[in-house]
Length: 424
Image 1 (cartoon, one colour):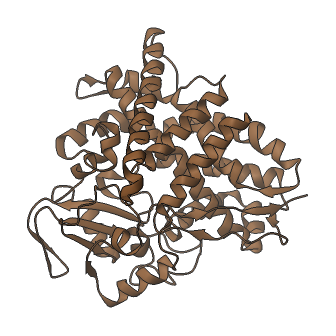
Image 2: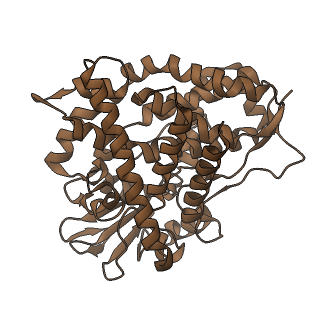
Image 3: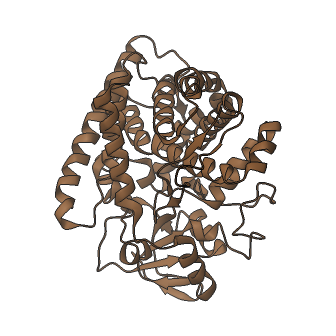
């Protein structure tokens, strides 16, 4: 790898981690105590207590209510009429000129989702699996396997980026450019800042990064349209997509691709770090999964329940309403702590235990309702490819006893900073 581009990418990822790490206390324990004591808290838990931003622009004068229980959060996330997402255009969406599917409501969201969703369904993603597997194994794991030991996080940071840009349809002959684009995408996630001394500079960097990503996505889209819109990659699918007689234009495709890229690699990186931490802490489970690869989907689902990367989803009340007996005024922000809901003891038996054999119940790691993560099948395919490759090429992988054990941290965007392992 080119040293300069690799360093730039590492720094961008570290900056995102630092921005969302928050107060140094046990996030699950803190939220669990609140969940059991009171179903709803007046106030902004993530920002005012843990000191991390959300995708909503922070306004001290706008009332915020924080939810912890599974039932309350499920009700909010599936009710897109009374709990809206348009406010995201003022927060994280501001770095995308407000054009981000997460910030769409109602008919606008329904039509956008109708055009985009077919390109992310399992029958399409399954056709990408061979390419994902090849990238993961030949470009990353085979060289790493010969090393015999090391931190898995450089692999975790780079393989999802390489895979997602390939299946989107970016040219594959310039890896340095891809790492540069990925660093720009991460700069967008660092845009929301609570520290006024950092906010202006971070905003400028985020807006510049978003513009540069749009330009390159538009270039790729126009080039593909000029050659006939063929191909099985994402841009090819979007160029041919129709919904209720309408097709996407180049600007819409480039805008969507730009909004996809910041989270597409970063979320998979953090989920991989949690997956490998939780797995390698349990050597018997490593052996069991190695012997029965059909357990990998269950393992991934339990990782996403037990340690969702994004700990919260935020919505805005569209009218005066009530949650758990508490009056919520129109315009108030409703912060749903999904990591708390995923460990609600009234829904999940032994909720604080990691158990891939548990009865499957709805959890919210990939979202819920109309704003369910559009790329979650892709993320699962990438994670499965990575784990299968590791178990094939590093069959005796284990935590390195000479290095600090991995630790999952973060008040928002959780993950392990390092996962040191050995294999023969």
